[in-house]
Image 1 (spheres, helix red, strand yellow):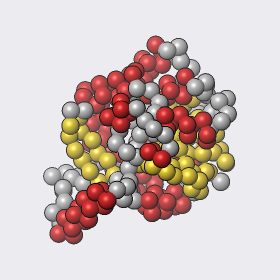
Image 2 (cartoon, helix red, strand yellow):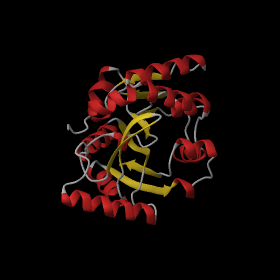
Image 3 (cartoon, rainbow, N blue to C red):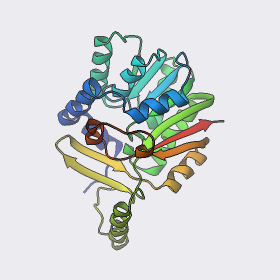
Length: 255
């Protein structure tokens, strides 16, 4: 059985079930309370150019627009989702948002070819970074975002946390034993990966621990500024909790 690759993930995001799921969220859910609070904290200048990675169908992109951010460049590598984002932007009078089809692990050539200037801040919302298979590939994405940003820029992103609860820790101890015996799902790339199917399609996700994320930030030129569980930042609606499991927010600075 072949291991999961970027092509696997791209195909899963372009699948009809996933497109419908993320499009519904873009139209009806909008920004989470925690996202809005941290966006306004870390990106106080609404005139500053922002770069959004993994924009999908535009849920966060159009949320930024609604908050008054106007210099927005957003990219994704799933063409079907990008089509939905462009359609929503046109519907809401946000045609000046620049949408690009680009791969976060090969970012700088795409931005250069499109004439995108360095950003004053960047976002990789809704665990998008962790849907990149392979740690070295995630580090390439972090390094690419670092190169695409100005000194002093903040990167805001989320991840799951496999140490977030006693139950999670117990489950991952069992998973570690499976890996030690060589009995893990052969499609997975490394320990911490999950690949599952539900009514919203197929999803690959890497769940790091805190030490892993801190090491990846340091290795790619980012300085850690902040991290906290979503539940400790804001109380979310039932719709948000249904859309997304508990996650951890991270903010890092480009020195």
